[in-house]
Length: 124
Picture (cartoon, one colour):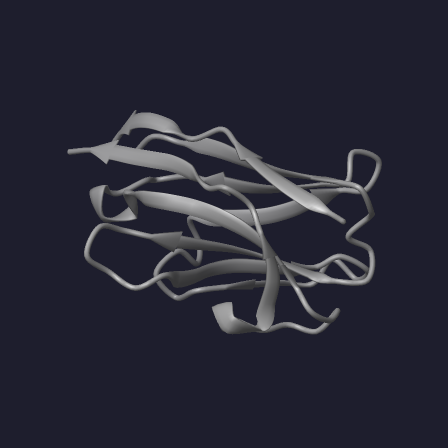
């Protein structure tokens, strides 16, 4: 009954920043882990970051650690992904997803609800 809607993608130059949002409707995300994944052309979907809603604990893929930051806004039932120092290899469709539990997982198959995705393109 919950829907996730991503927004904030676009075209940026290398070294620039974008802030993605993932808004949930229908029910809150309070009992879940929420993750960001991305899929580049010709590549598998890969884990980017996750946040445990209840605790605020965060997790990051090595490829984005130190550059990306995941956060939440309880009042807006929204998760954000702040992306700094963007690189061309960050170009992908970014998806937010709800995990089946409140525990961390970086495996896409353990997430049961997905947004439609938002395109991020980083030019060199």
